[in-house]
Amino acid sequence: MTPSPEAQPEPLVTHRRVALAAPHYLATRLGEQVIREGGGAVEAALTAAVALTVVYPHQSSLGGDLVALVRDPAGRVASYISVGRTAQGLDAAAVPRMDDRIAGRGAHTVTVPGVVAGWVAIAGERFAPALARAFERASVLARDGFEVSPGLARALADTWPIVGADAGMRQVFGRAAVGAGGDASAEPLRAGDRLVQPQLADVLELLARDPLSFYTGEVAERVASALAEAGSALTLTDLAQHAVDTSPALSAVADGIRWSVAPPPSQGIAFLAVQSARASAPAVSLVDRSVLELSMLAASVRDARLGDPAWAGGPDALTLDGYLRDMARAAGALDLAVERPSGDTAGITAQDSDGWSVSIVQSVYQTFGSGVCDPGTGIVFHNRGAAFSLEPGHPGALAAGRRPPHTLTPVLGAAPNGDVLALACQGGRAQPWILAQLSADLTDSDIPIETTLARDRFVFGGRDIGEPGPTIAVESADVPDDVREVAERWGWRTHALGEQVDVAGHVQVTRMLGGTLSAGTDPRADGLAVVS
Image 1 (cartoon, rainbow, N blue to C red):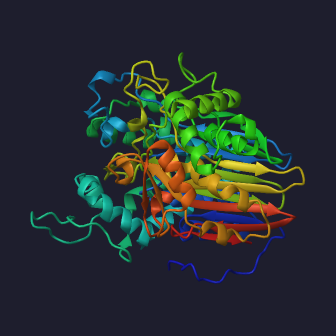
Image 2 (tube, helix red, strand yellow; image 1 turned 180 degrees about the vertical axis):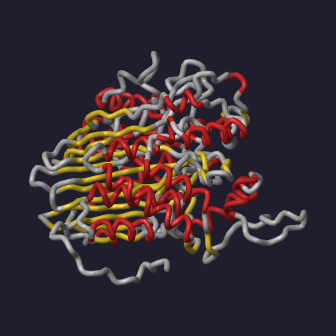
Image 3 (cartoon, rainbow, N blue to C red; image 1 turned 45 degrees about the vertical axis):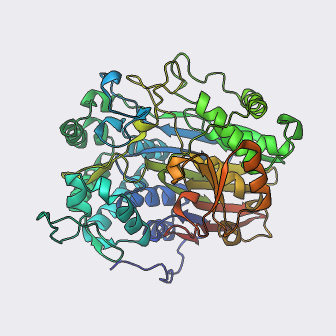
């Protein structure tokens, strides 16, 4: 029987305290079971992460990618970037275009899915048994089924005219209703319908025995075959060559807190730039140093500079000081032609009283990614390749064997007194700005997490948020005066949405402040936060 968010927890069987937050309550509930069995933050986070690929497939899938941070009890923060490359045999000239960009859907947008390898790297030998059990629990959930949540139902309804064209999507996520053309899956599942995924359950069982079979074994053969049939250039060799980039996190101190992010091709440095500029008045010469304006400047630099650092011409020199200098130049040139593509991402955060902190962000990029679902495995494949640039010489230019510029932005903040904040969110390329709007209040123990997460936010972009040109959109009923002033200075429009929306992010928070663990989940999602 599927537990409800209101279900009462069973008595604890361990003295360790663990906080966990995820955007779907079933993922949190499975993580909570692990906590009650004696598991800590890493085990709980991995369990929730695997479960999300079952219950939130529009945001997270075995066919997606991952960027994560893990802080150990000694205070060391490790970064895990499991972002796949394009096919070694890719013919970039043959990739479908749409206007001045890569066509956003289809198998040509799939780079090697990295999420499974990312989990394996995080687990290492120490947590490998917990990862195996996470696959087993997720397999049972996929096979038994669960009720479609409001968030998944919204995603299906909004994208069905596009993703419903795929036979695999219709088979897995279509309703048992006959449409005008005789298609038995002409309508998407609705909230409250039961979603059962037996093919995905079979794959999860295989991964429980050998997770790396996704890249070199039976699962790899099935994935490569499905992608080839859909028109992808990826091969078994490409899958086998995938590697996780593990390194110390990038960090900077702002207002006494050491903020840590993942290095490029992640856009985490943009978050550091906003935090540093806000804390250091001389860093950027602006009359208005609002988070909004600094975010717009940081986005402008990111769009011009971010790419795969492993290639010549990439952002090897993209240091924090250089980023801030570029922001100052952009301010002087009014160079703010930034885009904010929509994105669907799942964030998980966890902390425990032993000193472990985790922020995992995994994604299919845009809602349901490439729009390709393999009916034989139930795997939805991401469309991260749509983020490549078609501009010759750009650091993020499309080419064979490269990783795309990346949006996933896990964040950890640590103070000298032992306070730790773990942040993760959905929100596409807006993730740094969403987190920057909340970070100050989330470090204040006098402000409940729920109060901060419930506050209205801003997003900015153009056609990707449904606007005819560059626009700053706010969730509130009216546009605040300071937002209007920023928009007027840069020549942007403003739009009061009048309601809270998914594109403003699904933020997941755990924190240790003054020796007390707490957790919070975004009201825009279907999540649950627990401290057990």
